[in-house]
Structures are given as structure tokens and as C-alpha cells.
Amino acid sequence: MGAKWVFATKNPHKLAEVQNLLEGILDIEGLPSDVPEAPEPHADLYGNALAKATFYAQHLGLPVIAEDSGLFVPALGGQPGVQSAHFGGPARLLEAMRDLSDRRAYFTAVVVAYISSRKYFFSTGFWQGEIAETPRGSEGFGYDPVFIPAGRKETVAELGQAWKQHHSHRSRAFRKLVKMLQGISPQE
Ligand code: IMP
Image (tube, rainbow, N blue to C red; front, side, top):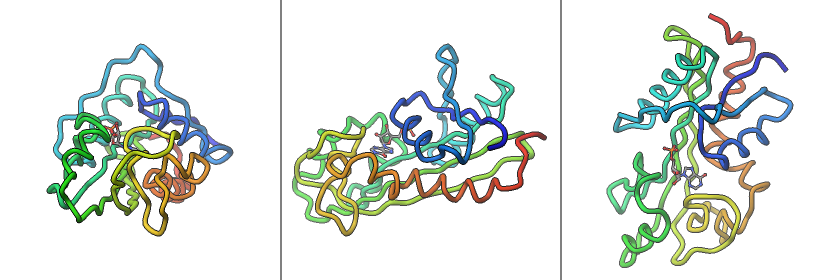
């Protein structure tokens, strides 16, 4: 299966999703529990993914895969967007959209596989859908209870993890990344 990568996330849901997705394909482990929080200083997902990857690769001396993701609602000017983790979750989103008929939304995931400052690879994944009127379902995390993927009536939290794994922005980004990393050694 090749060399080990550290997946630089402190979110246990994301780690479980990605480990399931890459089982038998890429060897991924989580961050040690005592590492400090990486800075996310940028206004865009690419900058933050690269900042996280660089920080943890230098801190651990290992090849790192980092990810930054968010939910974008055009009718809210792109909010919660890059700030999704700090926006206030589904309750605040539903409140902000109370009178909005345009409920379109999309998730974006930016993933970077970082070996050195001269050798790193970006991949992106998108997932379009709309925001439900009320939260539904119990699986997943974050905005899963209010996101209805295009072509479905259920929310992601109702559709469940196994279904999400084949469709999400994160799984799309990682599937592309795996193709890009074929034949690449995580050594400088
Ligand atoms: P990050 O850890 O800065 O990348 O934060 C991403 C945030 O975007 C998460 O805390 C969630 O609020 C939201 N988010 C990203 N991906 C998902 C997903 O698959 N389901 C639900 N919410 C997500």
C-alpha cells in the first residue's frame, strides 16, 4: 500500500470518513493528540489547507495530507464559507436563511498532499445541493443535518455515512488526489 501519510485534522469525523474512504488504498493516520493547533490565517481554503499541511509537516517531519472545507451559500454572499467551523452551525444558518427562497448551497473541500515546500499536490471536490427548512437525521457532523444533495430529498444526516462516502466533496477530492499520487514517493 506504500508509505504512511498523516492526515492533519483534529476533527474525528473527518478522520473516520477519510480512513474509510482510503482503506486499502492509502495508509492514513491521525495527528498525535499533543500537537498544537495549526494556524488558518487565510481568507481562502487553498491558503489554509497549505498552511495546515506546512505547519504539521514541519512539526512532525512527516509527509502530511491536510484539508480545508466549507459550506457556501450564494444567497448569503458565500457565507459561512471559509469560516464554516466558526459560524455557529446549522441553527445560525437556518436563522440567517429564514426568509430566503434561494436555498442553493455547495460544499467545497481543498486537499493538499505535502511532502516538501517544492513537492506538494492540490485537489478539490465540490458537492452541490440546497439547505433544508429544518434539521433532519442523526448521522455525520457539522451541516450534514441541513444539506440536501442535488437530486435527493433527504439530508446527508438522513442518507448516512456509507452513502456520503461515495458522494461528498471530501470523497471527490480524495479520489482525485489518490490518482495524482500514483507513482509519487512521499520522499523529497
Ligand atoms: P475546517 O476544519 O476549518 O475545514 O472546517 C470545516 C467546517 O465546514 C466544519 O467544521 C463544518 O462546519 C463544515 N463542513 C465541512 N465539511 C462538512 C461535511 O462533510 N459535512 C458537514 N459540514 C461540513
